[in-house]
Image 1 (cartoon, rainbow, N blue to C red):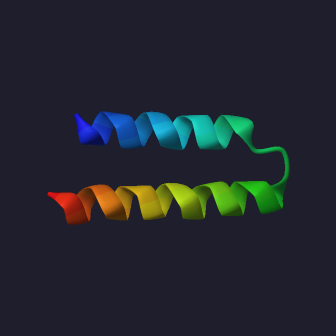
Image 2 (image 1 turned 60 degrees about the horizontal axis):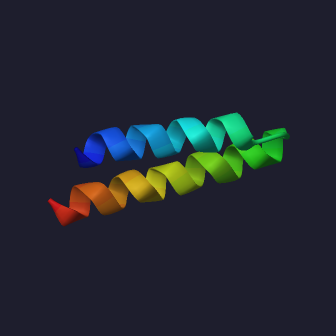
Image 3 (image 1 turned 60 degrees about the vertical axis):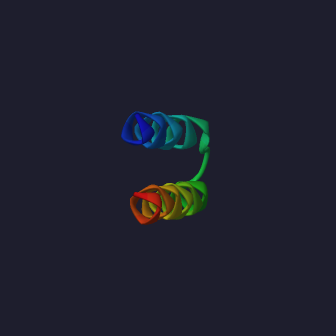
Length: 41
């Protein structure tokens, strides 16, 4: 269930970014979210 949440969050972050710099920040945020999910398990 947490993986699904992380994937959805990643999709929303990518959809909301407007610039290449924004994409980098979004990918970094998504990576941190995935790390948090992995650490919680």
